[in-house]
Amino acid sequence: MSDNQFSKLNDEELWLQYADTELELKNRGLVRTRNIVGERGEFLAIATYNSIAGMPNLQAAPEGTQNVDAISRKGERYSIKTISEPGSTTGVFYNCGEKDDKNIPERKFEYVIIVQLFKNYRPKRIIELNWEIFLRYKKWHSTMRAWNLSVTRALLADSKLIYENIESIP
Image 1 (spheres, rainbow, N blue to C red):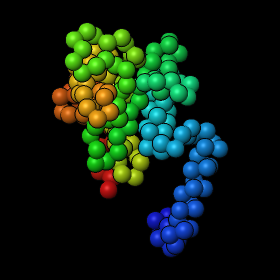
Image 2: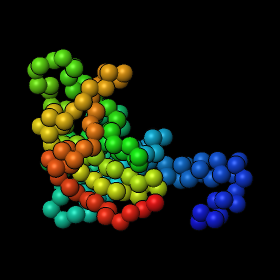
Image 3: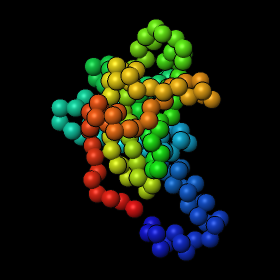
Image 4: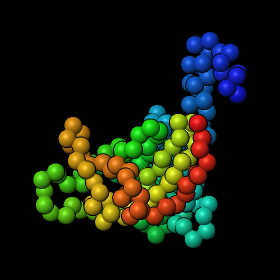
């Protein structure tokens, strides 16, 4: 449906179109939850990795697996976080140690994949960081009592670039 067609819908019709789209995404197995932004990022991360020769083949982790969203054929665990414009901070990582704990927390995953989306859900950038880089850049989110990551120049410099859309998309 084009932008022009959407603008012709009344408010109720637009809501119902959204609901129909959400149901069809679920029927096709493209989403498992109602977190559309997160689901879009997970779909893009897995599809991108699986389409690049030499990259690990990923499959979605079982629903409800904490901090792990995909698993490679070698058993490596990937946590996937999605950020949509204009944001630059991921959602939180639970059970990765407490703020004042000086001990290195138990490894919950081998890699973090951060998918950055333009406002229209098209991929902007996909980066990967290992557990050690995650530990170096994690920041405490006091309200959630968990860790998150901010995508900064320094983090980008230490991350592996998997995909980048260099076109400016409004």
